[in-house]
Image 1: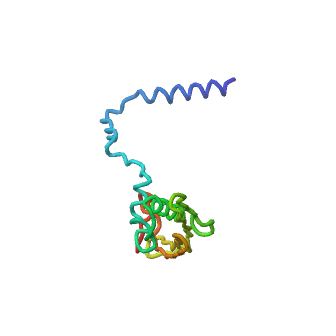
Image 2: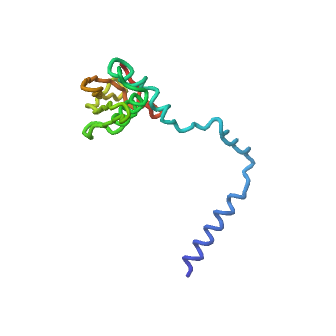
Image 3: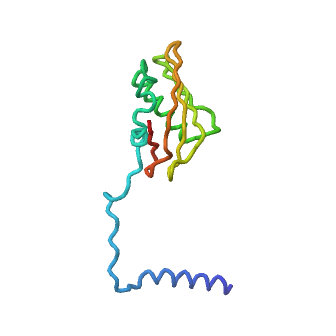
Length: 145
């Protein structure tokens, strides 16, 4: 089997070439402190500035409900237009909400998207439209309003 011998010889030569030095100084390795750490969920949610529930839309919501609402906004922005709304519910307080991603649009070089957040506190239903440019380089969405 001459083909097998040729392949084995090529692999052996390739392995040996790694042992040959070129006289060039080795490139220093990247220090762990310089390696970007993957963002945590808090890092991704922070640019939403508390979400639409940070204002009047969130009046009467518990902190737990607000956290659920902000996470729903993020998921809606991630899934985009044409997807089912993201529904959240805080069983403890009886509050609930729904976030729908709207039509994407472009401002300069930035991809943007509208989204609507509806919140129900007791019998009171409120809506608010949010504007968001697209994903930031680190993966977060930055709310404009």
